[in-house]
Each structure stands twice: as C-alpha cells, then as structure tokens.
Amino acid sequence: MLLVLGFASLGIAAYAQAPSDFRFEKFASLDEMQRFIETKLPLGSSRESVRRSFVGQGQATLKAHPTRSGVEKYIYDINLCSYYVWRWNISADFSDDGRLLQAYVNGEPVFAAGPQKRDAKEFETGHQAIYKVSRARPEASKGESQLAYILFDADSDTSTINDELAVGSGPTRADPADMGKVHVYSNVDPWRSIFDKDDAARIANYEGSCKEADELYARQKAATAP
Image (cartoon, rainbow, N blue to C red; front, top):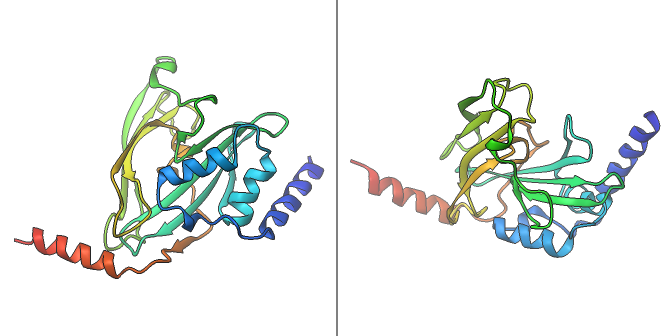
C-alpha cells in the first residue's frame, strides 16, 4: 500500500510539470468541454492521460472518491468578476486496469456507450428524504453568493453519499457578460456536480475583462429599480 501511495504521489508531481497545453480557461461552455473529452480523451483512454490534461496541465484539484474504487474527479473554480463562481467538475470512472469507462462534465455523462446517471427509482425504498440545500459562494459578492439545489437521499443520512441525487441549475457559459442559458441538472450525483461539498485548492480569477459584465449588470439593476 505504501508503495502504491508513493508511486501515486510521484505521478501527480510529474503531471504538475507537464507542458500547459490544456487550460480550463480555453473553454467557454459546457458543450466545448464535452467535445474536447469526446475527441481528445475517448473511451479507453488511460488514467495517466486524463490526469495529465486536467491535473498536470489544467491544474485542477484531484479528488478520489471516498468509497468507489476507480472513480475520481478534477475540480477547478473560476471567479467570474464576483458575479458567479463557475465550477468545472470533471469526473471519471476507470476500469481495474486504468482505462476510461465514462467521463462526466458537472455530473452529466459524456459517452452514450458508458455508464449513465442513476435514477431515484433504482434505490430501495426506505427512510428517504428530500432536502433543500445551499452552498455558500461568498466570492460572488456582486451576484449569486448562494448555490441552491434539491438533494434526494435514499436513507436520510447525508454522511453516506452513494445514495444521493441532486437537482438544480446553473449557467452554460463561463463568461460573466454572457452566461448562456440555464442548464437544469437532474438526478446528478452531487459528488460529481457543481453542487459538491469539496473545495478546489484555489479559485482562479476570470482572465477576461470585467467591464462588459459590470455595464450589463448595472443596466439590469437600473431597469429593476423602483
């Protein structure tokens, strides 16, 4: 076990030294990220190549699933001019020999041929519960500082995460002046989603200009003023 952990640490260090070809800031929308994974990291890709893109080059925070072997995620947050904290939560399922079985963008599966989202009907009936939950995002001091969602928990115990599903919404574009449409996340695994409880190692600042976004929100505020 110690040898395995040692090799894993060395591997992550090597990824951190990889050339920066992949950057999360290059992707303005959910669709763009899905197309990147479909074309550059198809089913059967090695765990090393997936980590190289998202962790080594993209500088995402790597999190192994606490209970599921071969499942991990790469989280990267961007502060969109203090109006919204955009989260990239890319997660992956790997086979025993380290080959990609499915990738997810914020909880939505990428490949039709891989495992799909679960449905609440799959869980055995018991002491089920539905909670209204919110996650504080104080960095979005000018806009959405709370991220709200509905949590379904099959055993009413939020300390066990394998029987949870989330329903909520978020924007489709990582651009404070044009955040696209509202994307409804239905029956996503919270751990894989924008609603997960884990923190990224850092929150990156939006690299574009905030001027257009500030002007847009100022007009919206003026239009709704009494």
